[in-house]
Image 1 (cartoon, rainbow, N blue to C red):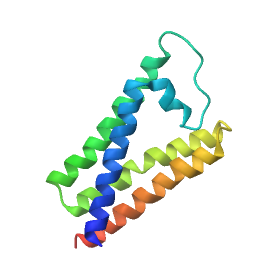
Image 2: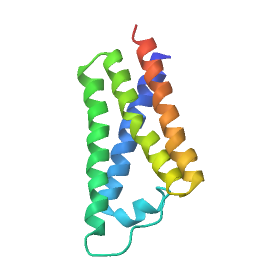
Image 3: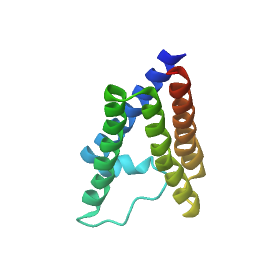
Image 4: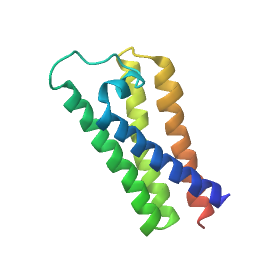
Length: 126
């Protein structure tokens, strides 16, 4: 079970880095799947969207760093802390009356996967 949990943690870290990279390279296209309408047009919108990309990449790198230099407990705690991000995204989308499909299907499911992975990593490491 521990190998699967570590594999899931690695997948989550790489997936969030890939999403962040997408926001850097093509921010408007990346935003379409988020669950909220695209922001109003303007010269600086793409730059604001790229900020999300930078933060996503940093979040993924933090998990990778904990996987490389921490204990399974540390990796699990990091995943639990970072699960706040998709929960927050889900709540913001629901509050804005955005796509419930994206809110629950992408963000909610991601949060659940992160929490389950965190628990499995922590259990498997002891």
